[in-house]
Length: 87
Image (tube, rainbow, N blue to C red; front, side, top):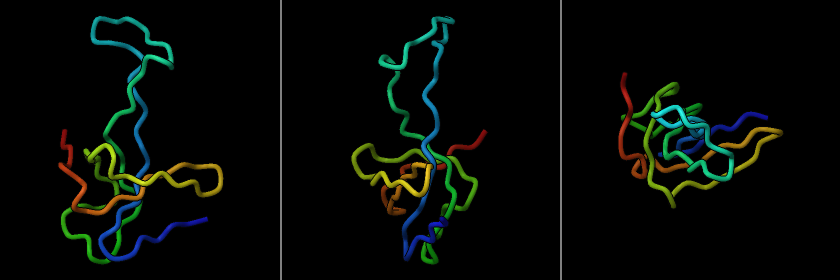
């Protein structure tokens, strides 16, 4: 199943939480925080500043979680993306 977002919507895949702290301590799954970073997998035709493959920071309670087949995705409006992460 493929998702094609409409208008200013973005489909993204949430990135995994870190399993180790900066000091090297391993974290159990229950202690991990959900990251607010996701990788963009599809964009609607009205999206102007985000493109497929970008890593973005988004507002915590603005993403809708959806399941397509066996995969889980986030559905966001472009206005709920706070930043594009560049390395």
